[in-house]
Length: 118
Image (cartoon, rainbow, N blue to C red):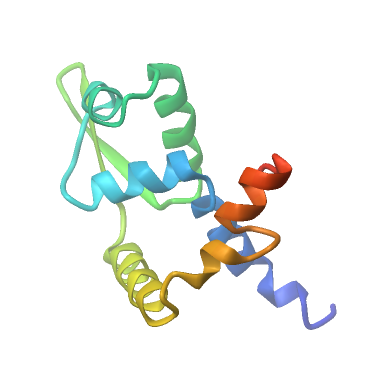
């Protein structure tokens, strides 16, 4: 086992949040629970897209749901995720959001090269 093996779970965590759709769902759920229909309406996304990304987030145990009748209400599964989001906002603020200028993952790289962010 090399020293990088121990970082795989952290890399998977950040990868799970790297998709803009999943991140927008997490940010919305940070304000309170929501049904799929609420998320599709508020985020302007297709139901299939929201459901697929919720499945990913549930698989990572970042979000969960509670059933009420025939409806499912999704919520952030652990408060530590909210702490991580707050820390990310502080880091973005501290760096003046300069990560957007990153030649590999930044906004400019995607716009100029057509690269897809992971």
